[in-house]
Image 1 (tube, protein in one colour):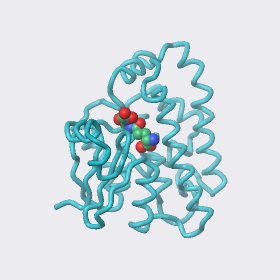
Image 2 (cartoon, rainbow, N blue to C red; image 1 turned 120 degrees about the vertical axis):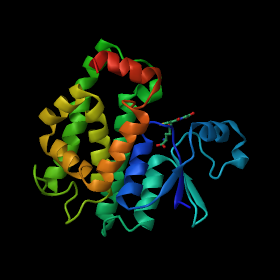
Image 3 (tube, rainbow, N blue to C red; image 1 turned 45 degrees about the vertical axis):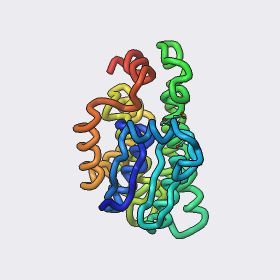
Length: 233
Ligand SMILES: N[C@@H](CCC(=O)N[C@@H](CS)C(=O)NCC(=O)O)C(=O)O
């Protein structure tokens, strides 16, 4: 029996942050699968393990606890698996990074495909994407990050902020060469940090599993198709 049940679509996107924290912590989980998610979402709220609108949703079997909303799930795992930094300031900063990552993936999918990408929309968005990247770069710089050493919030070992950073940028860069090139240019230390952390064995194994199981898919659906169209990937 695995430690957790994870409800997330068969795509990396938002669920990959939860998978990455679980993998980094050496935990096991069962993927509930797309039809179980659709069934749960389509059923009455009173039957849900935790009332929620959209996945990811995680069930901690041993604790008999379920939680949704990606940053809340990551916070729960960080707290219970002792992966959060010691000081209140660094704990708050960790959560800020997780929320930033969630904002970036909302923006890259135009809020879950409310609109589709066009060349013009993408062109207008690039300066904002570069600004997001520079926010990571400056955060790292303020905590002593260098291209080949250090972590996003300082410290001696990678923490939740690094795992989330690597998952955000390496998942995107691997699938969209143009975004990878922008990241290298706008935030070279963040790009290098993402590579270093993504190369850690549990995260490299998880990325290989995502490639095997989901292929090139990122967020799926028409919004991914429109993103590929403007990025030519
Ligand atoms: N704020 C939520 C967003 C959840 C969300 O939008 N999930 C998407 C997949 S990434 C979904 O399938 N939503 C279905 C829906 O909202 O109906 C979080 O951070 O977890």
